[in-house]
Amino acid sequence: MGAVVALDTLFNGGQVWKGRPAPPAASPQPTGHDALDAALPSGGWPEAALTEILTAAPGVGELQLVWPTLARLSAAGERIVLVAPPFVPYPQAWQSAGIDLRQLSVIQAEERDALWATEQCLRSGNCGAVLCWPRQADDRALRRLQVAAETGQTLAFAWRSLLEAINPSPAALRIAIDTRPAQLRVLKCRGGLARSAPIAFAPLSTQTGH
Image (cartoon, rainbow, N blue to C red; front, side, top):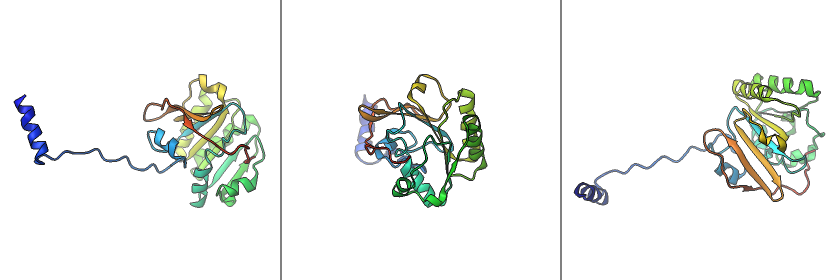
């Protein structure tokens, strides 16, 4: 007890330096959504990795989740590639979101070729982000995308059905978008435990990106 008292005396007298943990460095890949950044261990999208975004159906604001990031990347001259999007992108909506359309490329491909095209774009190292919508992708296919993202040091985003949430995935981050109530759920994240509390997410009432 005497030793404890003596140590407290030293602390209180300012004779012992008390180190404080350094604040975490800002993520180089912020999502653009403060509440989501705060919930992720890295403070943003996992770098050079695959992120899965799971939805019950298209048109629930799923593109608005990544638009801030795409706007930042395109402003820096980074190429954004959409591989086999389910709908024709609506240019005015993307432009209104701050995305430089000169940096936007769309690849039309059949399902059997879309995963291959996505992998090649990721591996090339010439893209800031690659977006895909695989309807049939097993664990092996997703792992190839994860490895390709690491190889090309590129952000990869894959939109899939919410039904896939019950299946394991090699993706570094998995986010579910709920509509009732409108919220995000972090199902899995690299570098720490997934946040259990939902995150409020109120996109535009109508998905205007298609």
